[in-house]
Amino acid sequence: MRIAFVSLMSGSPWAASEVLWAETARVALEKGHEVLISTYNWPDRPPALQELERLGAHLHLRTRSRWCRRSALLTLLDRTFQPLQQFNPDVTVVSQGGSYDIARSGSTTGLRNMLKLLRTPYVLLCHCEQPGPDRRNLRRAQQIFMRAAIVGMLADKLRVVAETHLRMPLPNARIFHNPVNLKRIGRLPWPSANGPLRLAFVGRLEPVKNLESLLDALAQESWTARHWTLTVYGAGPDRDMLEQKARQKSLQDKLRFAGYVHDIASVWETHHALVLPSRFEGVPLAMIEAMLCGRPVVAANIGGISEWLEEGRSGFLVRQPIPEEIAAALERLWDRRADLEQMGRYAHEDTMQRRDSDPAGTLLQWVDQAAATRPYSAFARESASAADTASIEHPPRSTR
Image (tube, rainbow, N blue to C red; front, top):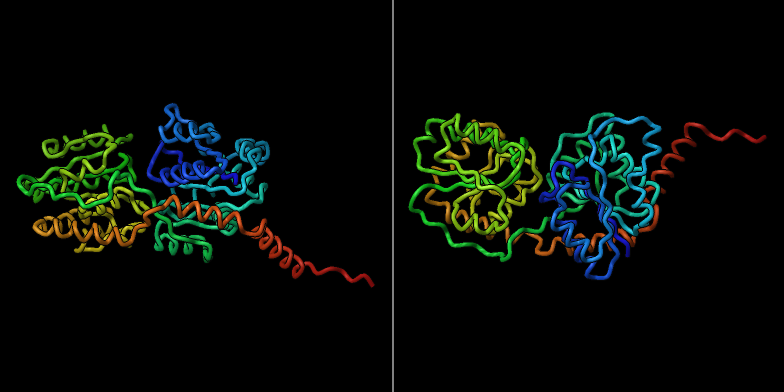
């Protein structure tokens, strides 16, 4: 079988949303399938992409450009996704960082046109909650979701939100999980209770992660007098600004920026809890990894987080991602710091029961099922619906 994987991740060379399709592509290659991978061309090619190329994957590296409106003529002349047509996949997997990236203007227009031209099944993966598409993009989003053989969502709550935004049911929606970055799945020994409460943040340093609000919460007088530390793991464009803000808030003695970390388990060998104050998320991989390691989590109640994190049992939910609500959730954490080890046990047990132990295997099964669907079925339904509407609005003239 020929399988194409198209990533629409444009904000950075690699992120948690890329792991699932990359792992599935690796498994597909090992099983003897032919694989094409279409991503943006970054100056430093991610190691996972280099490994897939070594295993025999065909790479289509797209030019990065600003998302902009284009004329109808430029859209017709766009040949960005011609390699996809030449590959002629049996199934295409489209991975989006958000839910509606494929409905945007710009080069995604070429992808939508190519999917319609190919008329072969595709699987759509939606990783993160987003605001609903505007009026201009709504019809595009409705069409692409309707035509998909399978729509993958990280949580059922995200499905409900998408159905509301799209104003249509999604009977083809299914839940998927992402692979974790842990060499061994198991609850780690609890760090020493002597010394400060050691908090950690793991993720990209960018506005959507909302670390500014976390610093505002921790700068409150009640927190500055307490014995705690926060280690920030990750890289991104906001690092300099956040370091400057930490100095302005006199938090530099309690705050450490540790950069990107490859061994996630090493973080949880020395830290007691994860804090994720994000404005938008799906089901953050950093949260799942922390809970599998036996650590409670403080996270904003957005995306599908509440489907994994139970208030007061495995962590604490931030009602809104604003400093006051983050501070309130941290206050609940502080009041129950003697219970955190037990909460970490619950976090591990609950996550082990819920998680898919083979996410790549599940996605590859979806690819097989999509390939077995009747060709053009979604387009045939849409065409038939349009024909029925036309016949009602414009009935044929009598030949008498």
